[in-house]
Amino acid sequence: MSEQTGILAAAEGMAVTVENAGGVSPVLLVCEHASLRMPAALGTLGLAPEALSAHIAWDPGALAVARRLSGALDATLIFQNFSRLAYDCNRPPESPDAMPAVSEVYEIPGNRDIDPAQRQARIDGIYRPWRRGLADLIAARKAAGRETAIVTVHTFTPVYKGQPRTVEIGILHDGDTRLADAMLARAERAGQGYRIERNAPYGPADGVTHTLVEHGLSNGLLNAMIEIRNDLVRDESGLARISDLLETLVSGSLSDEKTRGNARADATS
Image 1 (cartoon, rainbow, N blue to C red):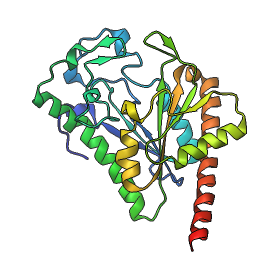
Image 2 (image 1 turned 180 degrees about the vertical axis):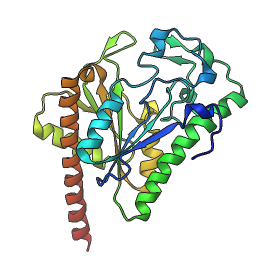
Image 3 (image 1 turned 30 degrees about the horizontal axis):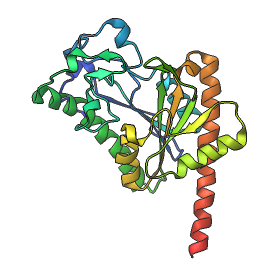
Image 4 (image 1 turned 180 degrees about the horizontal axis):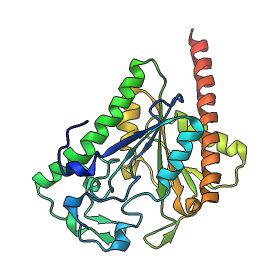
């Protein structure tokens, strides 16, 4: 991925960063909305500074949680280096939400009436390197005979279009529910004090499971998406509490799922 193409200037670096590439955990952590950085070629997209730093531009706290999980689990982490307003890497190119003209209550002037060449430049510069980088990580792990479970990390705003959200942590899935089922069951047993719900505040019908489908289901890998209400991770103590909880849920659930998988294999042998 050394050749720079598309919307990004060479001096801006690549769209993708991989940390802890040698991590031994089967977990592969993914953070599509890690950054609010805007490619220089796009300027401000016609937005005021407050909008460019708001939740519409990124998932505040998501990368911090993902990095804590990477350290606690010794797991590889891949994350996106540019704002989802430039290109939302949890959406395929054909989705209107890949380059949204409206996000929550904000109109995005720079995303209105994007011509085909401009659209393709964003796809080539941001989405394709991201997709290739994640696919290459998975392929390398498979070639090495390593297990992989994809866990994506996101945050959501406490108030959406004027409506408060009571859910605090969402565990999301698409067609493969195995890891999400195990995490939700373990959370219920633990009585951990947070309101944790399935496919909330979003679900597959909202188009938020693109990464899970594209890289998890297509490869037969365990996968789940974590959504954290961002007011819970605004300070160090909140980050620590949520990260510790999620580390326990993820690691314990993988063990639960492996045990169940072995039992299923024994039953059919």
